[in-house]
Length: 109
Image (tube, rainbow, N blue to C red):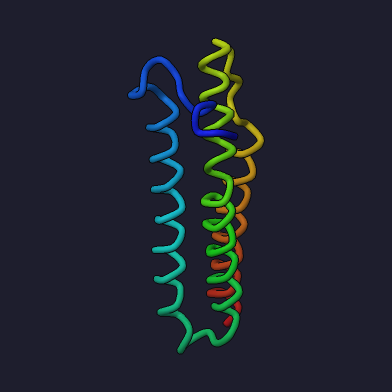
């Protein structure tokens, strides 16, 4: 999308705040991935799988930011913006999956 297509009437409205919130979520996943590395001396190479999983989810969030912002601005301009239920559900499932995998790893090793 061109830069002109990403404009709307109120620059302080929802798309920018939502974009910041997704960015904070990606950063938090990277921080959690870093904390998981502390387990490496005790649980071995399995920790790298969790680290890579959290990193991939964070990268997915970061790479989809422009598309998400464009959809939000388009929705505001058209006065119809459906919620991103699939994106939120995918993130929730990824976080639950990472958490369960970490619990299993801690219980087994």
